[in-house]
Image (cartoon, rainbow, N blue to C red; front, side, top):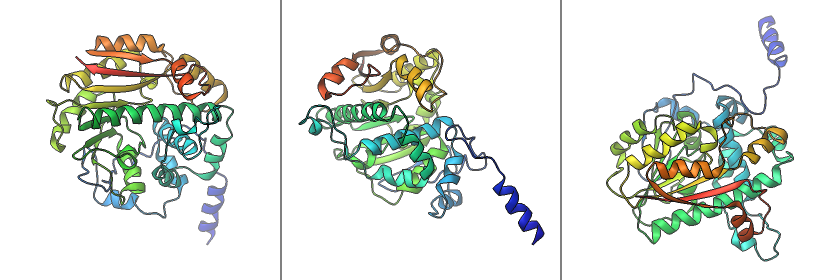
Length: 338
């Protein structure tokens, strides 16, 4: 009994964990379980018993949150912003709400599993909350439109989501028949996503691959084992990724993408102005964006140099279309593989 009391006292005396940047749990990093849907596969990670354990609904969100490294926890925060702008985003124009139609009930299941309520309340009270919600709403809407147009009208039926995080497009969008989606991210992200959504059918065939942006070429070579065909045109999604990469690594990323797909492939990438990084560091929680944060025009040059014909949608164009104030922080790139 004395030992139990001593252990309880030690637990109560532990300092509170910071909201962002908690160290990853090394003992859980390789436990990745496959989710549901049609034809999901996982290469390069664990599985089996570990994945089944992570499906246990009794695991408190505080424990799951503690598993994430800073970038993984930021993926959860992005999921929270997407939930906030679902069902209720409004622009300044009275009748403009229909222009942004995001319905994402699945992301709430992820948040219930991964985000402690206290952390969620703190994030929702940030000074930049309204701006970040607007950025996520516009970004999500335009990316959804682009990918669905290329899939339905152009017939490009394979999509690679680079650093997919807790993206739910495989579940919530209406894809054409025979659409295949390949998501690349860490074992921890895949495991928690599978635990939250694994019993729900996806709207397309989905495969999850453990890998990162730093060795994307090696990861892409493994995709053939789950049905990816580099000889056919491909859709690429690079959402909220470049801001965490050194400039040279970004060039290597887009070059690796071009080297592993056929001409006529399409990409959509989100870019942020340095102003957003500075605002986040001043008023928000994010501290791990790279110092060599390049203007969108410079990143666009890197994309074209890697073998893509690309054009950028300026923040002002997005503000005019959706009648929101993005503070010139969001830019989107559309590209075609030459």
